[in-house]
Image 1 (cartoon, rainbow, N blue to C red):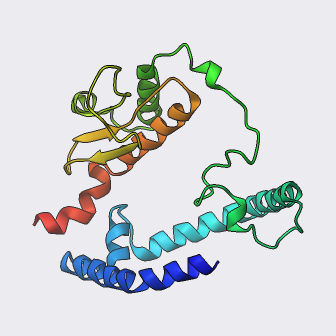
Image 2: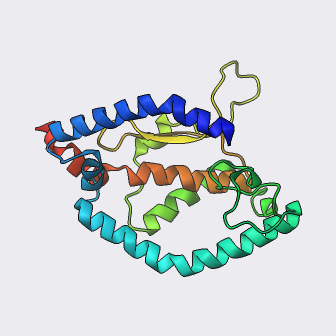
Amino acid sequence: MGSVKGVRVALKEGLVKLRELRNRAAKELGHKDYFALQVAGYGMTTDEMVKLHDGFLKELRPLYLQLHTWTKHKLAEKFKQPVPKRIPAHWINNRWSQEWTGLVEAANIDDRFKDRPPEWITKTAEQFYTGLGFKPLPASFWTKSDLYPVKQGETRKKNTHASCWHIDLEEDIRSLMSIESNSRWFYTAHHELGHGRSCGPARIQASTKAWAS
């Protein structure tokens, strides 16, 4: 906890400045504050967004409490510690608690992918979003993205951390991945294409309208 408190002190001044800069930029675009600017991208007011989130919390709380209770008992059993009121952050080996690798034994489904080409994973991820009503990825996505590992013999290097970005405010979506035929990359491809689709033109139109004018 000592190191966490130290980080708070070190970051405070910069975060306060960031808050002021964001709010100032949002006001210049005609919004009350940065939160209002962010919410405008969804075509909602801040009150509507807060109401929506409150509804989610109310609906999910019973399930969350059950899962949280089961989890903290299982982790306490694993670490041979008393059952805590809240799950200590250092009990989870991922700072965002996104994955519990090494803490639980999950099904190994890599065999389901070993006979599939990496391209199948990318196309399947795209089909997931078209099935939700999103448009197919633009043709430029397939020519301008770097989706697969560097081939043997190539001298270039690449950052293998996956990401997906809108290069412009239209349909220039590009992704950096190193997709291989396994369950990890199946999950990652779906995750990254979600970034590309959730930040598309419909998402950013409202928040950029004032800037364009």
